[in-house]
Every structure is written in C-alpha cells, then in structure tokens.
Length: 101
Image (cartoon, rainbow, N blue to C red; front, side, top):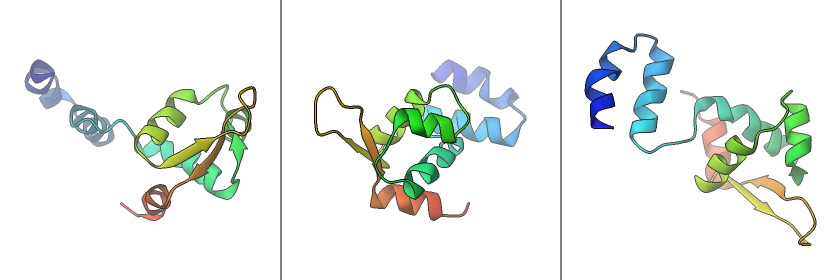
C-alpha cells in the first residue's frame, strides 16, 4: 500500500477518484456512492437485498450492503434461518446520509 501511495496516488487527477483512493488507503471501505442504497433502506425499513437491488436499478448489491453493515451504518436481521435478511438503518447511518459534504 505504501508503494501505491507513493507511486500511483500523486498521478490521480480526478478529485472524486483521488478522495476514494485516500479513503480506501485509510481503511474506510464505504464510498459516498453507497448513500443511495442507505437512503433506500431508510425509506423502506425491513427491506431485503433483492428489493434493494430492484429499487437501485442493479442486479445485486451485496458488496455495498456488507460494507455498510460492517461499518455500522446498517443492521440486518432475520427471524428464520431460511428467510432472507431484512435491513434497517442505524443512527450512525442516518447521520451519514443526512450529512451534507
């Protein structure tokens, strides 16, 4: 990672790409583009991953859901083992989606 920081990062010109690269180097795996998914979950409490993907116009969004859950922005639960996970937003997630950058 140090090599990337020294050799590649100085040559990234696009401000959004540079910010994302710095965030990834810092261990922050949740990108600003994931806010769309968090907002969908905020509006539709108890929604499952298939419904989220439909509303986000994507085939699947497992990577984003995992990153948001591990960062503490979302909670997921299910009542039965064979049931799909239902997602909800945490207070930390709500603060993140309402914060303006």
